[in-house]
Length: 340
Image 1 (cartoon, rainbow, N blue to C red):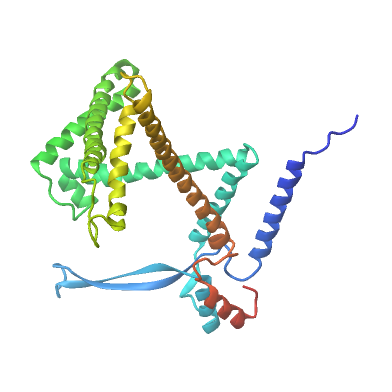
Image 2: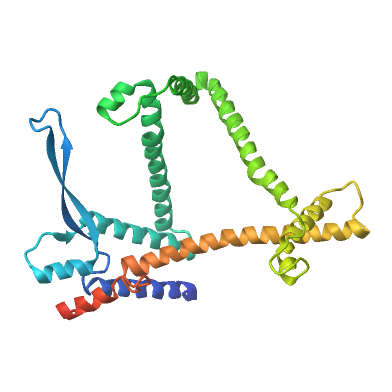
Protein backbone atom coordinates (compact mmCIF):
# COMPACT_ATOMS: atom_id res chain seq x y z
CA UNK A 1 0.00 0.00 0.00
CA UNK A 2 1.30 3.45 -0.84
CA UNK A 3 1.42 6.05 1.86
CA UNK A 4 -0.85 9.02 1.53
CA UNK A 5 1.00 12.22 0.63
CA UNK A 6 1.37 14.68 3.45
CA UNK A 7 -0.89 17.67 3.39
CA UNK A 8 0.88 20.83 2.16
CA UNK A 9 -0.74 22.78 4.99
CA UNK A 10 0.92 20.56 7.60
CA UNK A 11 4.33 21.10 5.98
CA UNK A 12 3.78 24.86 5.86
CA UNK A 13 2.79 25.03 9.51
CA UNK A 14 5.70 22.78 10.48
CA UNK A 15 8.09 25.15 8.71
CA UNK A 16 6.51 28.13 10.46
CA UNK A 17 6.83 26.49 13.87
CA UNK A 18 10.47 25.54 13.20
CA UNK A 19 11.24 29.07 12.01
CA UNK A 20 9.67 30.63 15.11
CA UNK A 21 11.53 28.17 17.34
CA UNK A 22 14.81 28.98 15.58
CA UNK A 23 14.26 32.73 15.97
CA UNK A 24 13.37 32.35 19.64
CA UNK A 25 16.33 30.06 20.32
CA UNK A 26 18.72 32.42 18.55
CA UNK A 27 17.30 35.47 20.27
CA UNK A 28 17.57 33.87 23.73
CA UNK A 29 21.32 33.60 23.39
CA UNK A 30 21.88 37.18 22.24
CA UNK A 31 22.19 39.97 24.78
CA UNK A 32 20.27 40.51 28.00
CA UNK A 33 17.02 41.75 26.54
CA UNK A 34 14.97 38.90 25.17
CA UNK A 35 12.21 37.80 27.56
CA UNK A 36 14.03 38.97 30.65
CA UNK A 37 12.58 41.44 33.14
CA UNK A 38 14.80 43.46 35.45
CA UNK A 39 14.06 45.57 38.50
CA UNK A 40 15.93 48.19 40.50
CA UNK A 41 15.88 48.14 44.27
CA UNK A 42 14.65 51.42 45.72
CA UNK A 43 14.82 51.97 49.47
CA UNK A 44 11.83 53.94 50.72
CA UNK A 45 11.77 55.89 53.96
CA UNK A 46 8.92 57.98 55.39
CA UNK A 47 8.16 59.52 58.75
CA UNK A 48 4.70 58.94 60.20
CA UNK A 49 2.99 60.12 63.36
CA UNK A 50 2.96 57.66 66.26
CA UNK A 51 1.47 58.67 69.60
CA UNK A 52 3.12 55.70 71.28
CA UNK A 53 6.61 56.95 70.38
CA UNK A 54 8.35 59.41 72.76
CA UNK A 55 9.02 61.79 69.89
CA UNK A 56 5.48 61.48 68.52
CA UNK A 57 6.63 60.02 65.22
CA UNK A 58 8.48 57.04 63.84
CA UNK A 59 10.35 56.14 60.68
CA UNK A 60 8.99 53.44 58.38
CA UNK A 61 11.39 51.84 55.92
CA UNK A 62 10.77 49.35 53.15
CA UNK A 63 12.16 48.27 49.80
CA UNK A 64 10.38 48.63 46.47
CA UNK A 65 11.42 47.12 43.14
CA UNK A 66 10.99 49.36 40.10
CA UNK A 67 10.99 47.81 36.65
CA UNK A 68 13.91 48.88 34.46
CA UNK A 69 15.11 48.02 30.97
CA UNK A 70 17.77 45.38 30.28
CA UNK A 71 20.02 48.17 29.03
CA UNK A 72 20.02 49.71 32.51
CA UNK A 73 20.96 46.31 33.96
CA UNK A 74 23.92 46.03 31.57
CA UNK A 75 24.99 49.58 32.39
CA UNK A 76 24.85 48.86 36.12
CA UNK A 77 26.93 45.68 35.67
CA UNK A 78 29.55 47.55 33.64
CA UNK A 79 29.84 50.19 36.33
CA UNK A 80 30.04 47.66 39.17
CA UNK A 81 30.16 43.92 38.37
CA UNK A 82 29.32 43.04 42.00
CA UNK A 83 26.33 45.36 42.26
CA UNK A 84 22.98 44.09 43.48
CA UNK A 85 20.94 47.25 42.96
CA UNK A 86 19.57 46.14 39.55
CA UNK A 87 18.71 42.46 39.37
CA UNK A 88 16.88 39.99 37.23
CA UNK A 89 13.22 39.87 38.27
CA UNK A 90 12.33 36.15 38.21
CA UNK A 91 8.59 36.64 38.80
CA UNK A 92 8.14 39.16 35.97
CA UNK A 93 10.36 37.08 33.69
CA UNK A 94 8.24 34.00 34.26
CA UNK A 95 5.11 36.07 33.72
CA UNK A 96 6.53 37.39 30.44
CA UNK A 97 7.21 33.86 29.20
CA UNK A 98 3.82 32.57 30.32
CA UNK A 99 2.06 35.45 28.52
CA UNK A 100 4.06 34.81 25.34
CA UNK A 101 3.45 31.05 25.34
CA UNK A 102 -0.27 31.50 26.01
CA UNK A 103 -0.48 34.01 23.17
CA UNK A 104 1.19 31.54 20.80
CA UNK A 105 -1.14 28.80 22.05
CA UNK A 106 -4.16 30.96 21.20
CA UNK A 107 -2.69 31.74 17.77
CA UNK A 108 -2.29 28.00 17.15
CA UNK A 109 -6.06 27.86 16.57
CA UNK A 110 -5.35 29.42 13.17
CA UNK A 111 -4.14 25.96 12.16
CA UNK A 112 -6.88 23.96 13.86
CA UNK A 113 -8.32 23.16 17.27
CA UNK A 114 -5.67 21.54 19.45
CA UNK A 115 -4.91 20.76 23.12
CA UNK A 116 -2.61 23.78 23.49
CA UNK A 117 -5.38 26.15 22.42
CA UNK A 118 -7.94 24.49 24.70
CA UNK A 119 -5.54 24.64 27.64
CA UNK A 120 -4.81 28.34 27.05
CA UNK A 121 -8.52 29.06 26.66
CA UNK A 122 -9.34 27.31 29.94
CA UNK A 123 -6.53 29.13 31.75
CA UNK A 124 -7.64 32.54 30.47
CA UNK A 125 -11.28 31.94 31.38
CA UNK A 126 -10.37 30.60 34.82
CA UNK A 127 -7.95 33.42 35.58
CA UNK A 128 -10.46 36.02 34.38
CA UNK A 129 -13.19 34.56 36.59
CA UNK A 130 -10.84 34.44 39.57
CA UNK A 131 -9.64 38.00 38.94
CA UNK A 132 -13.14 39.45 38.77
CA UNK A 133 -14.07 37.41 41.82
CA UNK A 134 -11.23 38.96 43.79
CA UNK A 135 -12.13 42.42 42.49
CA UNK A 136 -15.73 41.86 43.57
CA UNK A 137 -14.66 40.81 47.06
CA UNK A 138 -12.28 43.73 47.67
CA UNK A 139 -14.25 46.43 45.85
CA UNK A 140 -17.78 45.47 46.92
CA UNK A 141 -18.12 42.84 49.65
CA UNK A 142 -15.37 44.00 52.00
CA UNK A 143 -15.71 47.81 51.88
CA UNK A 144 -19.48 47.96 51.33
CA UNK A 145 -21.00 44.90 52.98
CA UNK A 146 -18.51 44.29 55.80
CA UNK A 147 -17.86 48.01 56.16
CA UNK A 148 -21.57 48.68 56.73
CA UNK A 149 -22.55 45.67 58.84
CA UNK A 150 -19.27 45.08 60.71
CA UNK A 151 -17.48 48.41 60.54
CA UNK A 152 -15.47 48.00 63.74
CA UNK A 153 -14.06 44.61 62.80
CA UNK A 154 -13.34 45.74 59.22
CA UNK A 155 -11.39 48.81 60.31
CA UNK A 156 -9.50 46.84 62.98
CA UNK A 157 -8.38 43.99 60.72
CA UNK A 158 -8.69 44.95 57.04
CA UNK A 159 -9.29 48.59 56.10
CA UNK A 160 -8.29 50.99 58.88
CA UNK A 161 -9.23 54.15 56.92
CA UNK A 162 -12.74 53.02 55.97
CA UNK A 163 -15.27 55.80 56.71
CA UNK A 164 -18.16 55.13 59.07
CA UNK A 165 -21.34 53.90 57.33
CA UNK A 166 -24.63 55.76 57.33
CA UNK A 167 -27.91 54.29 58.52
CA UNK A 168 -29.18 54.21 54.94
CA UNK A 169 -26.16 52.21 53.73
CA UNK A 170 -26.52 49.75 56.62
CA UNK A 171 -30.17 49.12 55.74
CA UNK A 172 -29.32 48.74 52.07
CA UNK A 173 -26.47 46.31 52.77
CA UNK A 174 -28.74 44.30 55.06
CA UNK A 175 -31.24 43.89 52.25
CA UNK A 176 -28.43 43.00 49.84
CA UNK A 177 -27.12 40.35 52.25
CA UNK A 178 -30.59 38.80 52.58
CA UNK A 179 -31.02 38.71 48.79
CA UNK A 180 -27.56 37.18 48.38
CA UNK A 181 -28.36 34.42 50.85
CA UNK A 182 -31.62 33.70 49.00
CA UNK A 183 -29.70 33.49 45.73
CA UNK A 184 -27.24 30.98 47.21
CA UNK A 185 -30.18 28.77 48.19
CA UNK A 186 -30.33 27.80 44.52
CA UNK A 187 -27.57 25.32 45.39
CA UNK A 188 -30.01 23.53 47.71
CA UNK A 189 -32.57 21.69 45.54
CA UNK A 190 -35.18 21.46 48.30
CA UNK A 191 -35.50 25.24 48.69
CA UNK A 192 -33.92 26.40 45.42
CA UNK A 193 -37.15 27.97 44.20
CA UNK A 194 -36.75 30.84 46.69
CA UNK A 195 -33.76 32.09 44.71
CA UNK A 196 -36.08 33.31 41.94
CA UNK A 197 -37.07 36.21 44.19
CA UNK A 198 -33.53 37.54 44.06
CA UNK A 199 -33.30 36.88 40.32
CA UNK A 200 -36.55 38.78 39.76
CA UNK A 201 -35.25 41.68 41.84
CA UNK A 202 -31.96 41.78 39.90
CA UNK A 203 -33.68 41.57 36.50
CA UNK A 204 -36.24 44.24 37.41
CA UNK A 205 -33.72 46.71 38.82
CA UNK A 206 -31.33 46.17 35.91
CA UNK A 207 -34.10 46.59 33.34
CA UNK A 208 -35.30 49.79 34.99
CA UNK A 209 -31.80 51.26 35.18
CA UNK A 210 -31.02 50.31 31.58
CA UNK A 211 -34.28 51.79 30.31
CA UNK A 212 -33.50 55.10 31.97
CA UNK A 213 -29.94 55.18 30.65
CA UNK A 214 -31.03 54.27 27.11
CA UNK A 215 -33.80 56.86 27.13
CA UNK A 216 -31.34 59.54 28.23
CA UNK A 217 -28.42 58.49 25.98
CA UNK A 218 -30.32 57.36 22.88
CA UNK A 219 -33.90 58.59 22.67
CA UNK A 220 -33.48 62.06 24.18
CA UNK A 221 -30.10 62.62 22.51
CA UNK A 222 -31.59 61.63 19.14
CA UNK A 223 -34.59 63.86 19.74
CA UNK A 224 -32.39 66.83 20.63
CA UNK A 225 -30.21 66.25 17.56
CA UNK A 226 -33.30 66.06 15.33
CA UNK A 227 -34.72 69.31 16.72
CA UNK A 228 -31.64 71.38 15.93
CA UNK A 229 -32.15 74.24 13.44
CA UNK A 230 -31.68 73.05 9.88
CA UNK A 231 -29.79 76.19 8.93
CA UNK A 232 -26.61 76.73 10.93
CA UNK A 233 -25.17 80.20 10.14
CA UNK A 234 -21.40 80.33 9.79
CA UNK A 235 -18.85 83.11 9.50
CA UNK A 236 -18.92 84.93 6.23
CA UNK A 237 -22.63 85.40 5.70
CA UNK A 238 -25.90 83.50 5.79
CA UNK A 239 -26.15 81.89 2.34
CA UNK A 240 -22.51 80.90 1.87
CA UNK A 241 -20.66 77.65 1.36
CA UNK A 242 -19.64 77.60 5.03
CA UNK A 243 -23.28 77.89 6.09
CA UNK A 244 -24.34 75.06 3.80
CA UNK A 245 -21.53 72.85 5.09
CA UNK A 246 -22.40 73.60 8.71
CA UNK A 247 -26.09 72.90 8.04
CA UNK A 248 -25.46 69.57 6.29
CA UNK A 249 -25.26 67.42 9.49
CA UNK A 250 -28.61 68.71 10.76
CA UNK A 251 -30.27 68.08 7.40
CA UNK A 252 -28.84 64.53 7.19
CA UNK A 253 -30.05 63.74 10.71
CA UNK A 254 -33.60 64.92 10.05
CA UNK A 255 -33.78 63.15 6.67
CA UNK A 256 -32.38 59.96 8.18
CA UNK A 257 -34.82 59.91 11.09
CA UNK A 258 -37.85 60.53 8.86
CA UNK A 259 -36.79 57.97 6.25
CA UNK A 260 -35.98 55.27 8.82
CA UNK A 261 -39.36 55.83 10.51
CA UNK A 262 -41.02 55.60 7.10
CA UNK A 263 -39.33 52.26 6.43
CA UNK A 264 -40.79 50.82 9.65
CA UNK A 265 -44.25 52.28 8.98
CA UNK A 266 -46.10 49.33 7.43
CA UNK A 267 -49.64 50.76 7.42
CA UNK A 268 -48.97 52.38 4.04
CA UNK A 269 -47.72 50.48 1.00
CA UNK A 270 -44.14 51.41 0.15
CA UNK A 271 -44.77 52.93 -3.27
CA UNK A 272 -44.07 56.31 -4.78
CA UNK A 273 -42.73 58.90 -2.37
CA UNK A 274 -43.18 56.58 0.59
CA UNK A 275 -41.23 53.81 -1.17
CA UNK A 276 -38.41 56.22 -2.09
CA UNK A 277 -38.19 57.41 1.52
CA UNK A 278 -38.18 53.81 2.74
CA UNK A 279 -35.30 52.96 0.38
CA UNK A 280 -33.33 55.93 1.68
CA UNK A 281 -34.06 54.68 5.20
CA UNK A 282 -32.65 51.27 4.23
CA UNK A 283 -29.46 52.97 3.05
CA UNK A 284 -29.17 54.81 6.37
CA UNK A 285 -29.66 51.53 8.24
CA UNK A 286 -27.02 49.73 6.15
CA UNK A 287 -24.53 52.55 6.68
CA UNK A 288 -25.19 52.44 10.42
CA UNK A 289 -24.82 48.65 10.63
CA UNK A 290 -21.68 48.76 8.49
CA UNK A 291 -20.11 51.46 10.65
CA UNK A 292 -20.93 49.49 13.82
CA UNK A 293 -19.48 46.30 12.33
CA UNK A 294 -16.39 48.12 11.13
CA UNK A 295 -15.88 49.62 14.58
CA UNK A 296 -16.12 46.13 16.11
CA UNK A 297 -13.66 44.67 13.62
CA UNK A 298 -11.30 47.59 14.17
CA UNK A 299 -11.33 46.90 17.91
CA UNK A 300 -10.50 43.22 17.33
CA UNK A 301 -7.70 44.15 14.93
CA UNK A 302 -6.32 46.54 17.57
CA UNK A 303 -6.25 43.66 20.07
CA UNK A 304 -4.45 41.48 17.53
CA UNK A 305 -1.87 44.16 16.80
CA UNK A 306 -1.23 44.62 20.52
CA UNK A 307 -0.51 40.90 20.98
CA UNK A 308 1.78 40.81 17.93
CA UNK A 309 3.59 43.89 19.20
CA UNK A 310 3.95 42.22 22.60
CA UNK A 311 5.55 39.15 21.03
CA UNK A 312 7.93 41.08 18.79
CA UNK A 313 8.72 43.91 21.19
CA UNK A 314 8.45 42.90 24.85
CA UNK A 315 9.26 39.22 24.32
CA UNK A 316 11.62 38.89 21.33
CA UNK A 317 12.94 42.45 21.19
CA UNK A 318 12.89 42.32 17.39
CA UNK A 319 11.19 45.69 16.97
CA UNK A 320 11.29 48.97 18.85
CA UNK A 321 8.16 50.95 17.87
CA UNK A 322 8.45 53.42 20.75
CA UNK A 323 12.22 53.89 20.27
CA UNK A 324 12.86 52.94 23.88
CA UNK A 325 16.01 50.96 23.22
CA UNK A 326 17.83 52.61 20.31
CA UNK A 327 20.22 54.70 22.39
CA UNK A 328 20.49 52.15 25.20
CA UNK A 329 21.02 49.37 22.67
CA UNK A 330 23.91 51.14 20.99
CA UNK A 331 25.39 51.82 24.44
CA UNK A 332 25.01 48.13 25.34
CA UNK A 333 26.76 46.98 22.15
CA UNK A 334 29.62 49.42 22.57
CA UNK A 335 30.06 48.65 26.24
CA UNK A 336 29.86 44.86 26.14
CA UNK A 337 30.97 44.10 22.60
CA UNK A 338 28.02 41.71 22.34
CA UNK A 339 25.08 41.55 20.02
CA UNK A 340 21.95 43.42 21.12
